[in-house]
Image 1: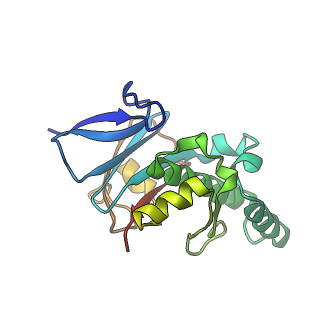
Image 2: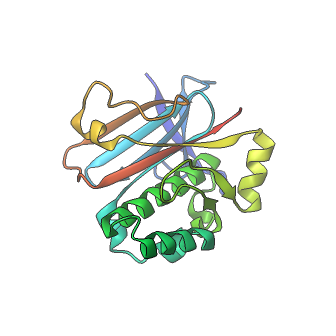
Length: 203
């Protein structure tokens, strides 16, 4: 049996799974990294053998109702969203989805680094907000310094949430070889949930 606890790198405490970064408590000295995310009706857990992992899921509807762009998006990303809106490259619903997906990438990254939302997501610049490869273009020193120390790069993968909700045979997979497993409990989850994983992987 695998036992999961949590550790906060800021206060050093272990006050339950809702405080700090999830860690495997037993068996001891396991090489597995884990992360957990929740929305009402759905819990997702991700495990990685390749490096530190973060996972995040969000409701597109909930995020679209909140004025999050200013706190979620880097100035360059805001300009890219404005360009997509001006060119009508994406529908309004498509823009909401793209913005929510981008938020989950950032939160997954900050979970993987252990910083959480103590680092403002708007200080992180990722490519791929309108499609294409997701690459970390800029980040505060705490994040870039950790990646340099680990000799790692941030590898992102979008969760196939529909498969998680259906409970199909492939529900445990995502679009990245580096993430070993994903499990979901979806009693009443909405269909508008999207998510991402981020693994700090050594090349």
